[in-house]
Length: 197
Image (tube, rainbow, N blue to C red; front, side, top):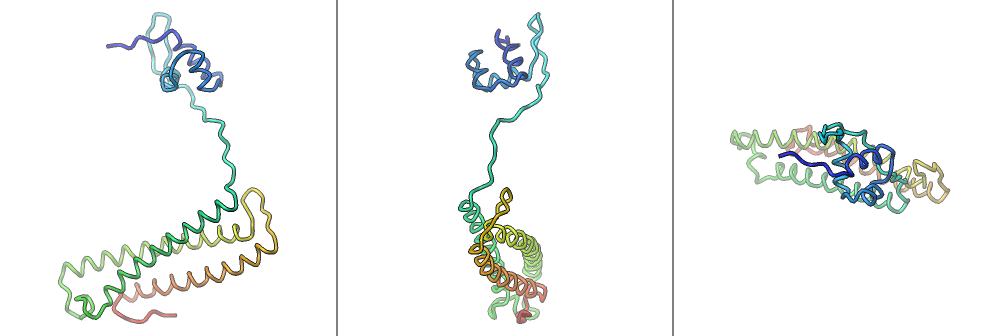
């Protein structure tokens, strides 16, 4: 069953290639916006034969402006919260392995399945913490820009924002030390040894 092209199909493609907005093409041709895109990708011969020939896609004239300082700070706060939550989950799993009553805490008390699961979990946690360390580094850079009142577009900041950057820098250092402590603990094998630091 072949699809019979509407008389407006050729016009829709020509208008699309000319850069006419989709809504205007739809209004002029009587096609829906989905049909405009459909016929923009086809050529209709004089005899009515339809050939698939995608037109070069163009993208809407929406310009993306850098987020406002408030939105940027809110996004950074959510990202920090997510990173801290991930660290807490990993720490809880490591603490469960270190618990005195757990079979993993006693030498020789593990069965083969528990050892494999524990090793897999430790490896997963180590990888997650490595990614988390990179995220923290990136967040620190972004947070520093945000605290200084800089946006990628403006690059401006005030003295009050710079003093706020010092406070956030200290929090970042604390977060990094905590992350390093937890990584050390994972490297020790989660055998109850106190972390370095």
